[in-house]
Image (cartoon, rainbow, N blue to C red; front, side, top):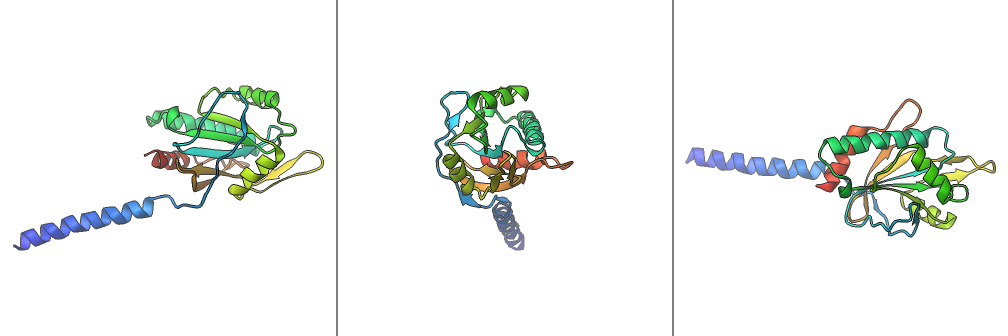
Length: 192
């Protein structure tokens, strides 16, 4: 009788531990993102609904944060592929903060300079108003000076398949690079 009670207690304890562990390890819900109507510069039809995505903001004249982040996101894609995650399971959205300068040909040239050919990596361009409204959903702050320099937050965002922001990651800044392992773990968690 004592063995049965002890076994039952162990089983219940295991279930309790599992429940608490999975609840605590779940990514929080930090906000929601509405649908957007921006142009994907390749001109292809695309859909991001139903799968998680990493959203970053950039501008092509950015001297440091944006290009370093692009390089790190390429490493993230390789890390995900090594873990058996296929490109069709997630999206990367790179949204220009400077649609006045970053025309479709300029962004396509930028994309080519970084040799980005993945079909799940979408470069988006909207009007100034569309860009501002989309960035505000993430609390992304940016400002363009009269000389065309854009100062911006250095955050990127993990969004789940239901359009909820679930994690915020730092972009590359100075010698500090994107935490590839952490970003990969969060994307995998959202995929599963």
